[in-house]
Length: 247
Image (cartoon, rainbow, N blue to C red; front, side, top):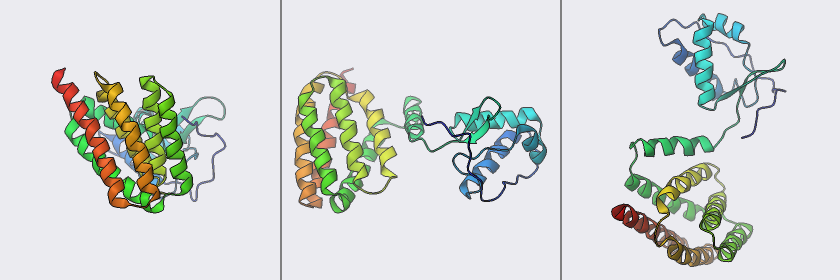
């Protein structure tokens, strides 16, 4: 994970905070700091004022302030750095936090496999449609190269990494950076369910499907490309359901 630089950028204006008087003071502090991030007053790399100054602005105890800062650090919003030039710095965005949050929801039973399956098919449908329209020959050539590379490796994990790379490039071809983190997250979560008997045989059919998808993308055939992706994902999810049923 990239560390924030102590050499912080200069905020557009100094963030101002209101006094907090509530038993859940740390939650209000977090809310105000998030608001400053949302309106652009605080940006990636910026350093928050010292604890003493923040406690005075919020009119809270140092313990309440530290609880808020710990909460923000656990959420990946800030990072506390030690040393003479240390302090609380605003973190850069980390897509891995989306993956971790979704994985927690799944493990806690808040999201079902069926919901994940439906979401993945829906998201990839949009991704393929946009990639078909916006993707470049460079994108398509890279997808084809990844599919070729997949054929040269036999280890399950190596092939899985090729799949991650393939979906990542496909998301990038949409020219919309929002899709990348969601595609990565869903792929990482579902990987936990995919492995099992018959996985190697399944992978062989998936490789050929990836070549066919590239062909449809190059032809700008949106309907053929989306149908290929849908069939591709449905094969994977039938495999997952079979494994879960037999486990």
